[in-house]
Length: 336
Ligand SMILES: [Zn+2]
Image (cartoon, rainbow, N blue to C red; front, side):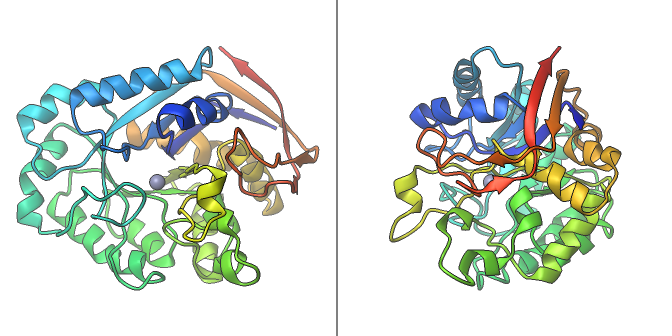
């Protein structure tokens, strides 16, 4: 099986030691990725975007990989500022305040008029808005509750591309077809697991993430659009590494680390559901190219159906399915 120019449209590369330890696992098999800006402090100036990009490029060494940079959304951004940074970024990421790792400086109200100057400028400059769409409500309802905010923003800013990040519910899937300017990323773990896998038996910290995995019918709705490569959905791993001690702790950090095994798991899932290879190719790259207007670097990943034992950790980060066997292996990666 051959995949061309895989793209990960939602990735956490972190910084410093962690960046150096894990950047390679994405850069080896992906042609590029949208890099999330939730560092401490968040990436919110031109200088910070440029400096972070340089640190990423240094960390990936000789791999051919484009880090598509994002800025941490602030309602105070004006058109002049956004014009000055337009060429350095691919999107802007909005976090509701305090909803996930390092999101304290995010948006707390979703008043359209308050957000209008920044969002209208983004719309004019054709900068997509990526949103972590969860309210502060009951954990299982947070995303479904946020759908009305997605819809309000999509209606108020009809030319603004809004990406519903890492969707996990049937409500979000339904919203895709109601608004022309709503798009979505879907992770591999939300296509594979439900809350039962996280907490139905012994608690599985390495499957704990935000948004939390939901019900089987939600997973079914996600699978339906992913396996059919609905043109408005694209793969975004939301691979979010934490050191082992932060996951296997009393007070487990949210995030699933999947980047080294994402392509193998997608190959297995699509095959299991008899989805044609061209659908996987569209989900892993083609749709994202259309939605974001990006032309990725040439990279060919050849997968083979040969069991692969997932390592217990990658430089101290425990991946999803650690020590388990998955059906596909990466045989070869060809650059250029
Ligand atoms: Zn994320």
